[in-house]
Image (cartoon, rainbow, N blue to C red; front, side):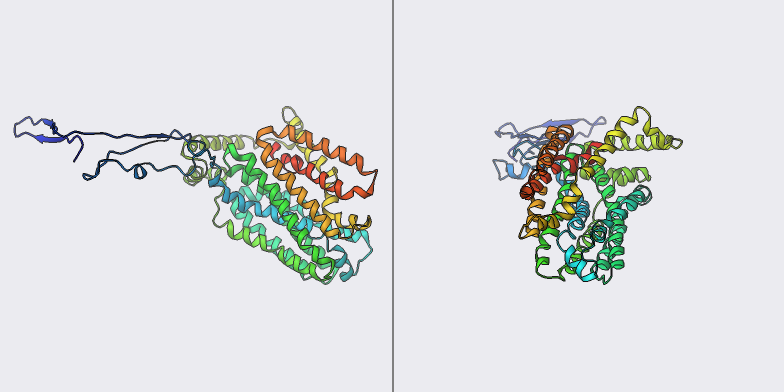
Length: 435
């Protein structure tokens, strides 16, 4: 062995001693290699070569790079990667939401003609937007469901009304049937709208929470684009809307299956007494160095929750909570009054009224701009902060709305840039600012 060889000899005396000796005539060389990472203070050192026939250590065998090297060496920050698959599955629920927002945009005329309410603008609006009424009811039940069942099981149960509602709507032969189908879809959507941001905020590492949270809005935008794209054939095929509604059930099947392999919220696991499971999730998604601190935080929050059993809803109107409650609520209210729902639900009808030849294609461009705004938010939110994006977004939408009254000829241009300004922050930051 071409290295310093140490041996121990135990003497036969009553007081045995360890005696060390080495081979003095053999020239020895020692090799060491230090490689440091920016991830939790991990240092990898080369091991002395144990092969007697080798004179040069095999560095490739001695150094194993961490797959999530943050910035050291390759310069890639992949700390978000362990949580990404779980967040992606959850974001499919937002894809479903976006799909149902746009699914009636193009084919509403064909549906009205086939089901016998053509020309009745009130009924047309009711069919398009009744799922929002169901969403309101569904959202009220989300908190109690999550507290009792956890996020994973709530996601899976929530797919039931989404799938049934889509199938009932696709098979509808009367106004009542399609209204009930859309209402069932709304129940599921209402749960998802509240549940997805909660799940992502509790699964994603703190450093990447803003970027991964952007997947909520990106999923919604992609769902809108998908439904608007599929709506183009409805201009020539009066029965195409049924196929579109059958397709609406597919993302819910994916969510139900995907959640079987996703993790549950570590905060809920800790609250339910499953401390070891919570530690395992935090270790896998956030890193071993975060385990103790995260568990202590979860337990502290749980104790505070228990001490607040005598609290009242009216306390949110008192200091220091009133300011936060007012700002958070105002963001949601202003977002609705910004007019975004009219753009998303009825853009095809608006383009038809102003003489656009392919209203479905024009609506698709609106959806693509919507998606571009969400990508800008993904890039900017952790760099510029929520406040700057919200202020800039509302200023942009206000400016564009002031020009809209001057010319109907620029409606396509206005809708596109209005959507882009909306999604740079309003579609996303209202969730993350409260979180």
